[in-house]
Image 1: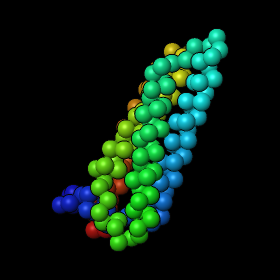
Image 2: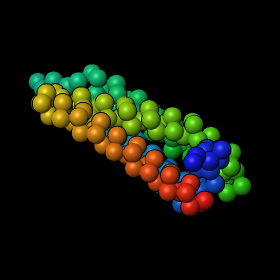
Image 3: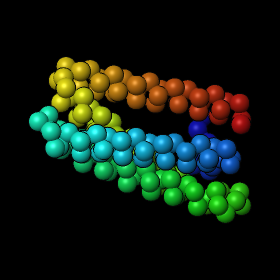
Image 4: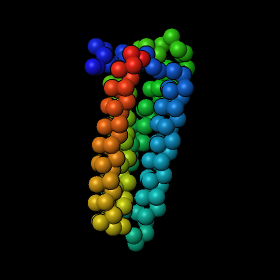
Length: 148
């Protein structure tokens, strides 16, 4: 049984610690994206080739995660009384764009070194995403069954 308001249910579990973790993940991932951009910029001037896909995906990832950092940081700055106003769809959208862009950048970078490794990374990444979805749904069922 799903709650009548799943977003409200999720919001009811938000805490300062959850938001701080979300903010820190966003900033760390933005740094990782910037690292890929720096790596690609060093390759651009050398005889080694670089992937334009990796570059653009890293740029999208960097911007998405910096936006996510600022989005969550505003709630942390103003305190718990504004947590109920967080738009979970926006937060999820930022995360989805950020993760997909970063995954694309990493796959494109690996692909330049080895097509087989790139394909393996895609397959393993999709398997990981599917496992996370199944696990999250199982946790939601447990949460709903316990009336939390």
